[in-house]
Image (cartoon, rainbow, N blue to C red):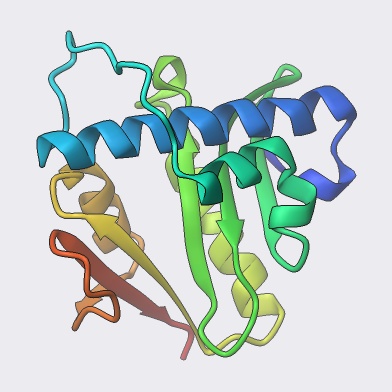
Length: 167
């Protein structure tokens, strides 16, 4: 069974796994941005030099996300995925990532539901997220989960923005 736990409460080996997942997320995303699309299933992700802002997150997630809520999807002591929920006037979901070997098992949906529940319970009226337009499976999940497309708050081309309200 997949359970979601807070990174802050997780044992050290699970917190370390978050850093690994974060690195996978950033490398894959940078690769996709270079291609302008998602690579095919048989295309390996090359080793890409990551920008400093991402290397800082990977090296010390506890500091990089000190005011954020990091959630981990865990099954049988194995971290399968992660998501970060920011705090502030415009709470946002970031870094939603599932290990490729654990995909198509509901891990992303479980993380998404847990993060939106945390957001709602702490009193947020809405939560937002952005996603590259070529990530069609993620966009479909967001729509199924009650997120609606809105005008972009980000000027990077190819980035779609979504919001979920908690009325």
